[in-house]
View 1: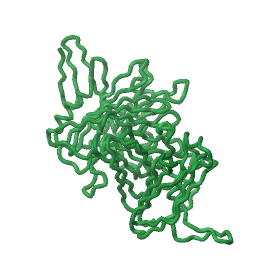
View 2: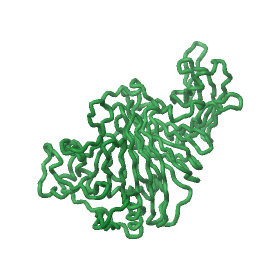
View 3: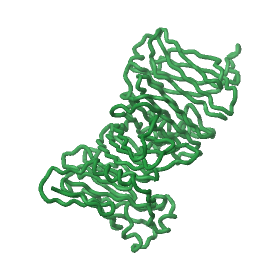
Length: 512
């Protein structure tokens, strides 16, 4: 028999006899459920003011000493490194290691870090605690050089990349009341448990305890690195109190400008974004593509979907020439795709777009929100697989063409003297392409199906074969009735009664 005793937030293991004990999400769920039945205790910061008030460049100087990486002396491909507290990362998280027979805390020590030129009092930081951690794995090199593949830092945020990728969009454990007037609540992972991997393991298991004023949760992450890194997520969520909106499997990204919304200032970069669209695979089989915007006002788009098959924020543009940025390599940033496991029932995918003046702010959020929520204290279970990929075509079935480009232009009419005369309309050029579509003869009778919301008048709606992409190009010109209101548009291509493409769903922001 063996017992688990809780002392503080540390799990101690007492073994009285040999048994088949193994740490599991149920151990975390017990703590989450217990927390949900108690009043919320806000985390307390133990960070000295000199570290809290530091600038980002100074925080970057505090580097983990790589020769002290956790598991560096074990025959395992995975290693852990830790983040120091600083700036707004001002509350400690507890990180535990799980072995076959023990659970013990990985204790903070300033010796793990090189502080560079950052002035600090060794006495005030000796028991500080970690802000988060990262996972290393030999992903890109045959000589087993360590690459950072996963980072857990701040609230319930985590970022993941596959081979040949650079960090872009983030995932979160949970989102609460996003874009509501009451203000958003940001749950945080307060405790982690990381399973010590075996020498031949190709995956890593991480558990996390989530806490916030109105929700708690237990999470299990199974991370499998590769060309496409996947994360299998299992979560058990408990509400402390009623919430206005629960965001499940949230993704957070950045969109500043791009082909459908060019930069208002001269910029050598044609586009600057971590993601360029929201993709949804609805339960009824429909595919939807919603290009992203950087609106002048907060915008929320809702897509009612029952039992979604998948959704995600994608970076479909993969050519370097689309970005021209050697420093930030937006062409190498991953798409994030959520693949629900099991039926999630009735609900909606929501897209939140927030105005931003620069690329340092994540201004795009997408998540699933259930139609109804249980009473506080009742368990909610969500399982899903997260894909981090640069091969977006594999997410779609080959018989359904996708939107390759959404281009925006001033609407015009070609005069008899061949001069193009602007006519006060807005034009969108939408290129559809796909594996099966590329095999169709150029004279295939492809027709557009276009609808415009009440705030727009459709002026032109035409389609033609595109020999470069071996797809079809749709041209839409519309006249906006009230520039202070957004304008909704939808379009798809058909051949007879057969739908050839996903649905292009776009919102022209107000004041554009």
